[in-house]
Image 1: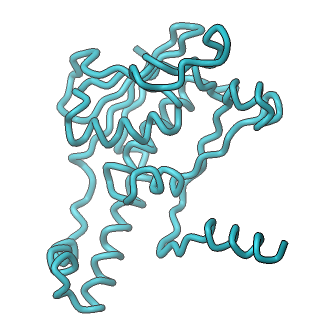
Image 2: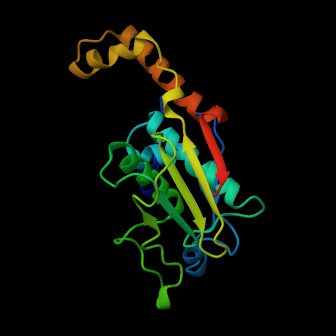
Amino acid sequence: MGSSIASETRVSRTDWQVDYDVDPIEIRDPVAEALGVLEPGKPFVITYTDAVKEAGHSCPTASGAYRIVQLGLDALYPDSYPVRSEIEVQAAGPRDDATYGVMSRIISYVTGATDDDGFSGLAGGYGGRRDLLRFDVFDPDTAEPTFRFRRTDTGETIEVIYHVSDVPDGGPAIGNLQGILDGSASDQQREAFADAWHRRVQVVLSDGSLFTVEAV
């Protein structure tokens, strides 16, 4: 028993070097409820650190994707939990785009929406999430990353634009990255880079002016 607990502790432990200040996303999953993973009506709670685990890194793109889906779902479901299998995600750009590709993975992780390779549902398609993630769906009014979230039960649609060009550049310490990658950076340079990098991430997680949210 003791060794089992110790093993679980080793597996679940993560030595995070930074704490982010951003609310979690709460979302229901009908399949999880049906199979007894969640109590009926109770949501999964997804944090930004969960999104970082999915992406494998934290950056303005990953944090932007988290805020895009968070803001989109908040607007789409102002008085209730969002529901997986009832959310269609529409991306303005292509699947193989460096920005849209990374962002869509995080947005898919949160919403459950997938293209043609996702969960098809329980008997009769209950809770299915396949074909709910679509690329190159519309022509945006901007070159900035733009996603739309549509409720399949009501048809309501919310568009979120991420003004990534307005994210601060982080200053000269960002230039220390190359030295970190090739092993020549000092401890002080590594620390300065980390402070500047994660400060940019926190700005994206905190500054609502970087996003435009509207019904379409």
